[in-house]
Image 1 (cartoon, rainbow, N blue to C red):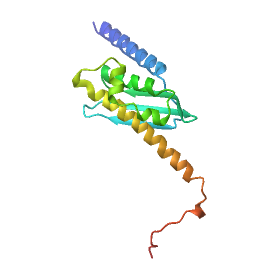
Image 2: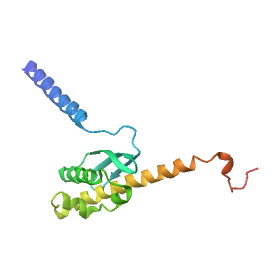
Image 3: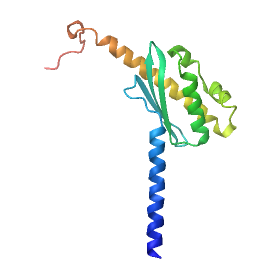
Image 4: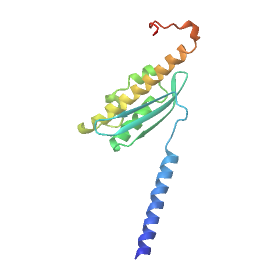
Length: 152
């Protein structure tokens, strides 16, 4: 009996390990993203997105969520809607566009589409901040002045 329990446990661990390995391998992941964002909803679900831009357009995008099926569908739709778009075009993607692209949502799950749209805005914010920092770093430090009084 103990031997059967031990074998069953080993098989279960093997199946779960294989499932996680396949899931990790098949999940897209953008290395060295130009922008990334993370949103945690009031329901406790978390969404993450990583984006690579080329010529100011979304070239590659990956996402992750620990949420429900509605959350995963909204996030997937948001990434498909954003792919190939400019920053300005991404800002036009709101929760209504996301939920319509998946065929609608029950009222109780509309927050999933809202979170997906917020995540897109977070990615745009991150991208714009990094672009601004990049432009500022082009100037030498001798051109930058500090107006704070010196502490004796």
